[in-house]
Amino acid sequence: MKLPVRDNIASLIPYPPGKPLEELEREYGITGSIKLASNENALGPSPKAVAAVADSLKNLHRYPDGSCYYLAEALAKKIGVSPNQLVFGNGSNEVIQLLIAAFLGPGEEVITSQPTFLVYQKAVQAQGGVNRVVPLVNMHHDLDEIARQITEKTRLIFLDNPNNPCGTVFSHEAFSAFLDKVPDQVIVALDEAYVDFVEPALRIDARDYLKHRVPVVALRTFSKAYGLAGLRVGYGLMHADIADYLHRVRQPFNVNLPAQAGALAALGDDEHYEKTIAFTREGIGWLSSEVEKLGCTPFPTQTNFFLIDVKGDGKKLYEALLHQGVIVRPMNAYGFPTYIRITVGLPAENQRFVKALAVALTEVDRA
Image (cartoon, rainbow, N blue to C red; front, side, top):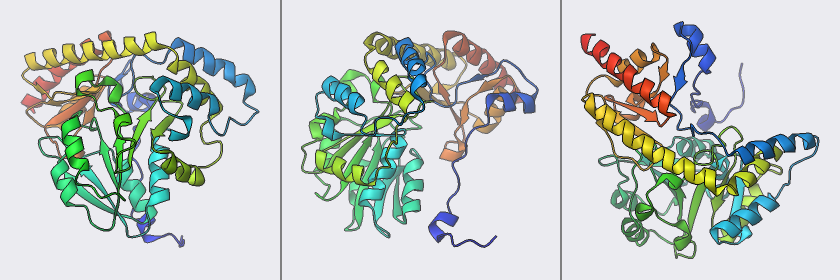
């Protein structure tokens, strides 16, 4: 079929979604699988959020609040900003797209690291923009080289901090020094999807930079620490002038009714939030210790996932684990062929992974 599709769209590759767990089990002839591949919150959402979502269902015949008024008021009060500095989206992915739609023209440039969250580069290409990519150095953002890559055509810089897939962070000092090199007209977007898991002493507070000479935007989500990945709700924290332009390109009613109800309730359950953070850090510590005993090297992380150097073919090891019903993420597509990535699971899932890893290492060694 001949269609008048733009070249920049025709050359895009669709996001590769993972197969449903049930389909993988059917293909491999296994049952009782566990998924530790998608950086999800194994504890799940707050029971208060679940109840709020259930209660919202009776109003599904109504449109949601187009301004996320109550969610914005509650979040603004909690983090000490004005509601007009917040823009909510159908996941933080949508806020990324809004930034690009509002501030990037055809042929203009966006700088990202590589590897990083792949949505940035896809959204730039779809907009007709140009991606300038800077490789990570020792699995960390190369902020000096990113600054050197800025041109008169640069409009946005996306920095995931912590980085996905590596789990690394940069310091206040490094970020401040970087901003000193950035021109006034370039927007720096800090993607803080995993910021809740960062140790307090290492955490950058984006609020400190909202009045900086360089416009800084923080992107956050309710998918990770709040366990609401299935609802798709995220937000951007920014200067009110930037938010105004994002609202001009934002679709009405973009955050659905159950998502707003769940996020608002989750925001008010500090006990469940703190339990999630403690659970995650404990899981990271235990898993790291156990994989070291098996001769693998865990990479330090500030997230709910971490990389493991298996000292061999990571793709083969992924397949060997899959045959045992344990789903992780191979890293060959990211340029790390000897690594896999694992998300912290429930204690029984973590134990099952370690046992499966021990078997898989033996099988891959014999292959």
